[in-house]
Length: 571
Image (cartoon, rainbow, N blue to C red; front, side, top):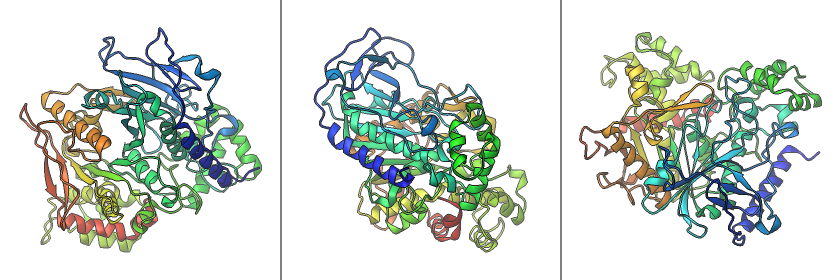
């Protein structure tokens, strides 16, 4: 049996070799179908859907859904790195046309339900201008959904508007990747007979599929931007730091929103979680039979195992010097062991209120702050907690910027989890010589979530609400979409234009909307700048504007990036 890490290395080399060859593939024969427009990849062909979101025929954007980018991870391929498809040309490119007019199934979520989602979910979706053809070399943006590495679907993040709105043409792609137990089971037995971080390897395989095949949709494999929010933003950073930067990256640019990391399981916790899974699935917890039993277990047993582990605890881990994550990404960023790319990073103004651990009335004392905020970070020692309480002075003490203990607590929670890693990464990119680096702070709330809990303000996911048609998740891997009012629509269009402009040129101002302010680079002299995305009251413009990073916020970020908190408990 080939050792898992060696097998992963061989697979990576196979994928890379395939990339080098298939970018030069000859023109495939034109195929037609009564189903819709056809894109022929030589080894497979897909018929898409050119209707508009409201159902009119012959829309300006064509959608192709449920396209496999790797073999189904079933049976013996459970808990292994994604295996490549046979993408060799067949019958001179005269292949059967597959119906790709709809979404494929979502990956199994947590909580899991038999019948909701599928293991066979290594699928991606492509949106292209209807008139785009091979050779157009349009830039490409690849979206990675968030959801804590235990939930999330591509259906909640349609890229139709991104493609439709861009003035000179852009290709949109989103991919499914394995989640929770199926995507991130780890421990000694997995290392011996499997692959940790399979979900991240899925993401990488999808991006490499895009490199090999996007030219047939009219895209440019050398102009790929990856983008994601929360766990998707964390995924973006982990794709940047993959293999310690030793293998480069199959993309040119990256956008990371609310980079969200939770507690990183050490080996002891990995073993505890592995035993939880095997116990629920009815399998041995150690020895050669453990993995073979898990691979032959019924879907019902796997669903039981998914629901048996704590929510969000089965997530990416450090998997060794030759692994995808050779060290905590915070350390890889600090040491410069990552691939430099053009970069946008930012977060929502009140991300921390979603994860502070309680409601405003529950925060009355220093003890409340320490107990509730740091419940999420079990590895943090008391000395670090006391230093943090001094750095965030209590309300009423001289110089304190906090009106209440709740303000103090959510700010602390935000900067540990979301508010500092973007600033940290932006500085690291500058130090690596990247000039196209930009920052933002999202300052407009998700209307649906705000109406349900106004005290949360501009809570987590507010940015994706505006970027994806008013999206909010629903049960069983679904999504709901809320129509925008006039001022929300202005901000949505402005944000999409900034995001797609960056994806097409490396600068968010290149094809911005006419009413949008120019976006200043992150570093200008000795100051750090960020765009504040804000809804306005005018029907002609938003209230978005540039601001400088407050010195006190930078001081606090330096503390978190240097303290043991990041190194012990955050990726």
